[in-house]
Amino acid sequence: MDQLVCMRSFARVADLRSFTRAADALGVSRAVVSTHVAELEQHLKCQLFHRTTRRVGLTSDGAEYLGRCQRILAELEAADEALRRTRLSPEGRLRVDVPVVFGRSLLIPALPQFTARYPQLQLEVQFNDRVIDLIAEEVDLAVRVGSVRAPHLVARRVVTTRTLTCASPEYLREHGAPQEPEELRRHRLVGHIGSGDRRPRRWRFQKGAVRRQLALPFSVAFNSVEAQIMAAIRGAGIVHAMDLVVAEALAVGKLEVVLPEWSAPGAPISVVCRAALRDSPKIRVFADFAAGLLLQYRQRVDALFEFAPPG
Image (cartoon, rainbow, N blue to C red; front, top):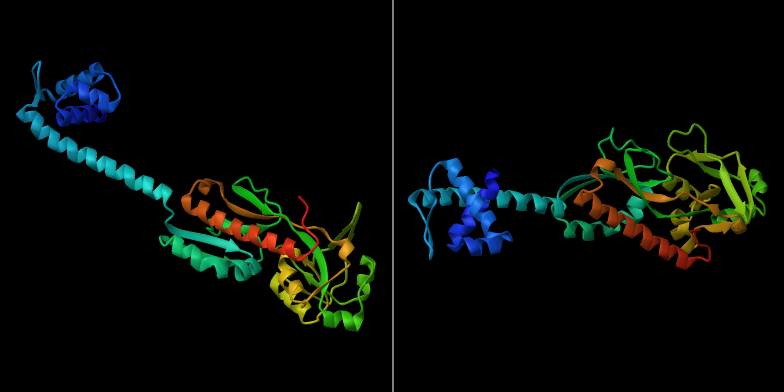
C-alpha cells in the first residue's frame, strides 16, 4: 500500500462526498479510489466512511483522521512548493571569477540591473587574469579566455576574438610603424605573461593562408592584460592583444592598429561552471547575463571596425 496515495484518495472522497466525483478529480477510476480507501481502512483497522447508495459520510474515526491527513498533505504540498521555488528562483551565494578587463569594463556597469532583478542572490566576484581551479577555490562560475578541456567543467563558448597589433599615436610618430611582423624586433614591445607561463607568450600572425609565430624580445611584460594595454596607451611600446580588449582605446584614438593585414584568430571566450552545478538557477541566470554582455560588446566592436572575428 502506498499510504500517501491512499490518504489523497480518502481526503478527496471526504471533500467531495462521492467516490465517483473523487475519481474524476484524481483522474482515475472509481474502482481505484475504492481500493485505496479499503486498503487504508484495513491498515488502520477501522471504518472511515458510512456508505449508502445515496451518500457517503465520515465516521467519527474518519473525521478525526481526515483532519490529520489534511495537515500532513498540506505540509507535503508546502515542502514541494518550497523546493520548486528554490529550483526556479535563483537565490543564495554565487561565487564568480572573471578577467579584470571584462569585470571593470562590462560587468560593473551592468551589475546594478542584474542585482535588482535577482535580489535573493549574494554575488561574490573576484577579478583575475589567471586560470583558476574552480573546485579547489570553491568558485561556481567563471568567464574564461581560451579553450576549456577539463572533464569536470561545462563550457559555453560565447564569442570568438581576433588578435591585433597596436601602438599609441605618440609611439608611432616617434618610431614609425612596422610593415612586416619581423620588423617588430626593432621596436619596443609590451608582452603578456600568462598564468603558469615562465616567459612572455609568442605573438601569432596570419595573412591569408600564411601563419607566423614569433618569439620576440620584450621591453616589458605584464601578467595583467589591463596593465599591458595601459602601458601601450602611455607609449611604452607595441602591444599584441584581443580586439575586444583594445576596442575602446582604438575607438577613441588612444591606440592605432599596425600590421592590420596580419591580424590573426584569437582565443574564444566562454562561460564555465562546474558540471555538478550546470542546472542551478543561479548559474543559469548569471551565465545568460555574462554571455549577453559579451555578445553585445562583440556586436559593438564589429560595428566600429571593418574586421570581424571568424565564425
